[in-house]
Image (cartoon, rainbow, N blue to C red; front, side, top):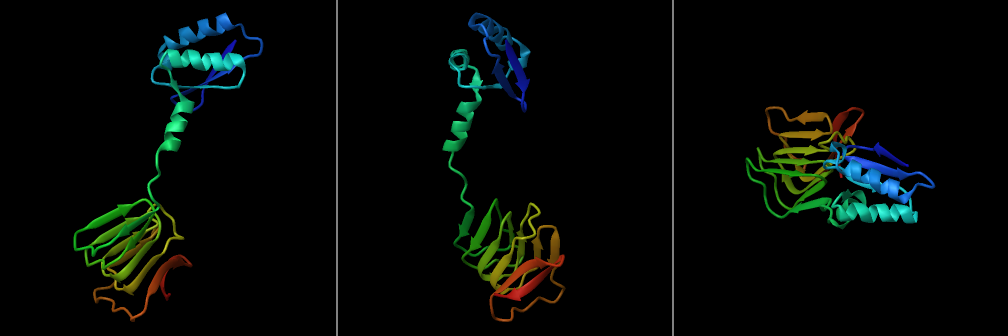
Length: 187
């Protein structure tokens, strides 16, 4: 009468067969709720039949976790903004990590570090370490008004400045991956 499948732990899918007897369905559900199988699991009742709605109500009365309620709670949660704006200079030893793009309205001094899963834009001088596309995204870029970095990483590619410090040519530059290497271009 009832077919139960584990979709992804800990979610149990309840599929009711056509012509299922209501009393037998609730009897089987009672056994399932009392078994170790249902401990900490979320239930998802398949279908829109009147019996499926009664089963959902029954599970709610028994304080069973419902996947639909979980989905609604996740939808209501406000997402983290994609762009992080930092309105200050980053000093030596400071580290910023963000899941998305980072915009710095100031300088990034030597030994300061920015780690972003997206792009990094510095509206000032970049002298520290910039890690863009931290989860392996090699389409990410690093842009700075004055590019004098200790190190730039984009995805898995790394560019390290040699012992002598790089002097910016005086115009904004963009660092990106091209032909398997990090290159600098004028913006």
